[in-house]
Length: 605
Image (tube, rainbow, N blue to C red; front, side, top):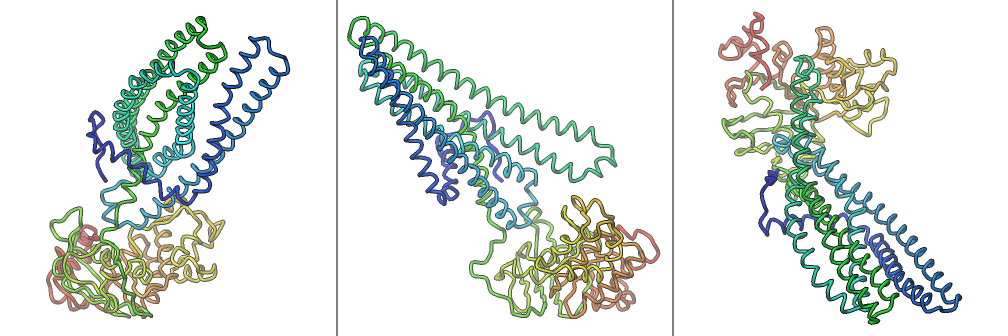
């Protein structure tokens, strides 16, 4: 993410132009609704035309009345004034409906597009981006854009049309008085433009500070059990209060600048109007113009002044929306790393699940040294179970991340059924892989739907069969609502063991070619672990399985045990061979079976 501009900095002209150009990023979202935009513009033109005709009717009413015209003529002018007022109201209502609909529709499309784009970004992006900041962009920033598209932009167009039409009618009514007004315009417009740059910078800073508060709140709310366990409520409350205060101070600077800008614009506009009307009054007294003409000029001057003041206020809102659009365009401009292949190579059908690592060297983008894997070579065949063991930081979890194409190695190749993963669409690859992770992820939905995430088109009976295979059916059926039980956010209504069994059932349902087990039984009690182990033995049959486990009892039956240390393979073989051969595995086994330092020695890396 680009860092926000400092609140007190004055942007140079190129940067200011770039930020104003940020609103152009809305074009792809507006273009599908050209018909609605055209209809809104027609309604806008009709409303502006009707309102600009009203002062002419007022002029004739005044002049006809002052000259003792027939009552029928006065009635006609009043009727015309009423018709114009009704037309203005009807077209204004139609314009309001159309632009409000457009604002809601565009923002809905924009939010969907941003969210879909974020879903396709690689893990390296989420390593450096807080989820709360993303939520702020999806909510606060899009709301600002909604206000502009659905209101401010329409009002700006209406004000511009009214201002332009008023200036034309002012010139027709009295060129002399209009000339005086035009001389004053630079005194109003130039300061507004200069101050608008400052408002834009302050708006961007205010939005960034608000995003900081969302990021902080999201991080704390996702770890409430830890916060309360360590009695850190006061600490995090103070931190959030400080972040909110910073957001308030940034917003206050922006509001103060906009308030000063509005006060200056309104005072200068109406001061000019008062002076011009004083000159006009002298012309009426001297007979150079009629009272009706002065009344007409007065109304057009009010229209012009109100439009100018409204534009000055809307200009500030447009600057704020420009900052929001810029942030969303930045997000939409982020590309997956590694990039998706332009012409993906399809995988063989059916997928055999033979996975090969050939002399792989890999470092995480956010921490390039030391490398997570160095000259790593491993082949996983169909029907084979390979276990990765080693101390924390050995690189075991990195192997799983590369197998899922979350990252791309800096050297070497990874092949699936002989096809280089660098040329494969990651979504096609992952369709053949299921993972049971140590940290189970459940959604705030029913148990039935959480298991169905393994295969969204599965029937209810297939879901229940998967639950039985994962030794989860027994506890599910004891729940009051059974498979329709809501698990709560992140599965908080279930125990850790129950969550993990649902995760295993999800993998069973997917029936993948490759199965990745990352501490798949770490949260289970001894009895449940025996049941799940039996289920896993059925699951791993006839498919390639890669296992990470710190309890050696869970990997003793593996076809091969690969011992890793510092990103390299240091030994490989069966449990018996490795135990008898000494080395790192033998030391780890001795520590575990003697119940000394088990968790620290064999925690995942």
